[in-house]
Length: 328
Ligand code: MBD
Ligand code: FE
Image 1 (cartoon, protein in one colour):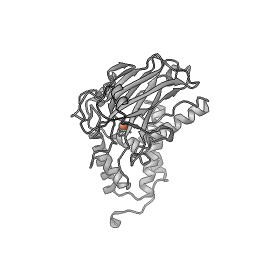
Image 2: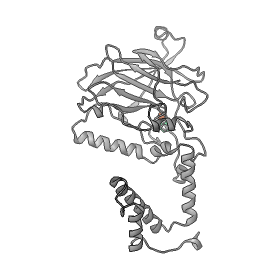
Image 3: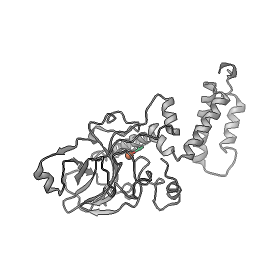
Image 4: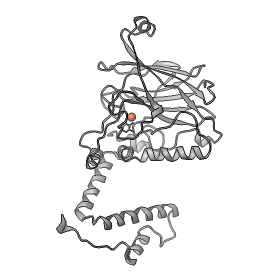
């Protein structure tokens, strides 16, 4: 590799500095000032990186090929949590909440790339295991939604989605039916929800995919612990995006997406008592997972809904682009 390096430093020259201003459109009056300022910063940082690390043309074009592979596989939403961006945005929202004295309530953690809008609604109690999963352990997932004073919130919306016993998510995994293991649950008069499902397995990025290649270059793995995603909302309260991690998974504290938070690690309770099994209308042992949620009251309507992003089956243009490709 050494013969092909150039050992030159040109970043701080007037030619390069002027070139960066032109590339970022700073010599014209069209476009967006914010886009120009941000692109100018990012391009400057990358040009400087090329100079400082004496990045060769071979290395540069290999990176472009990796970016093309990420795009072709719609994998930027998968690499993003792997490189910590999703968690970093959470840290910034946590800091903003603290600065505005909105602290309290159940902690947020990342949404991830595998949400699908429009899951069937259930009121209070229901099932979310549409497809048989003979290797899966039956799960009862229950809890209560409250405000931070402990008052139950009736009619709150609890959206839940998780993987099957193979770590696959419906919509992205063609072997599953459309909304398997995805539901929108409306809490009952006591703010409670209860759904019968299957204990999920952890998720691993597809072996050999572009995201996997990037992680391997960093000496990292692409595994997530068993987890269950939540969106929880109620009028007058801050929208909550969060997840629970099931305790005891080898990756509970080694999540490639950095979503684990101590308050969100939940122990399942295995129930083998015949009477209790009968009460739930089951014919064998099952695991109960309890997750109560506390929401913070807010006036600002923009804090009461999830932020905009391209999502599968969400009715906006960007989302339908994503929905066209389910490769993650
Ligand atoms: C997942 O299931 C997930 O939640 C994240 C954050 C990344 C990849 C797969
Ligand atoms: Fe997930």
